[in-house]
Length: 249
Image 1 (cartoon, one colour):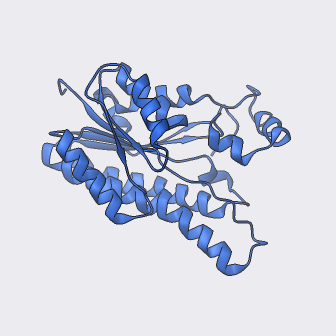
Image 2 (tube, rainbow, N blue to C red; image 1 turned 45 degrees about the horizontal axis):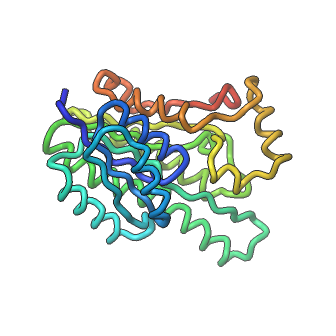
């Protein structure tokens, strides 16, 4: 067990990412708080963290060179990287009624960030973790990978791909003492959820769970925090559902 854990949380300016950064800071981790566009909200997250040694960092996950630079920044701040929570993502509607070129453009944007960007973050992280023979990656996916997303097929496809990537990397990295695991939430009360659902749709989604509600970001963050701990290593390769019994696979 390391005396000080250094962690990157992507998409940490709001929602699950923010709640996860706060949760990990309570556990004594030093945090790199990643954001894509909203620096002010990332700074708000930074102000909510416990302890010290935290900083913010920016990268557009649709651009390879910005992800490369993100890890350059991490190398300047941290001597090692121990935990990565791959949470950044986009949900862009692109129903079949769209013109083919427009549909494909939105599909590609979604997959570039949610899968290709996340994959490159994993690759950079694993190179560093392999060298130190220590680390955990938690990929935040979605129940949408299993139950379908008719208006956002790229979202469902990207999250299904990230689940599969998680399991492949868990096999590849295990011999180096590195675990890779995925968390698949259902709907969570975040800004993204509010953008996707109107009031009537939200009530319908709540009714999918016998708990008659959707998750809070803090509930997902507590699960992620548990998975980041060194005594959770044997969960490597798992895709852990957290959806209030709204969907079974």
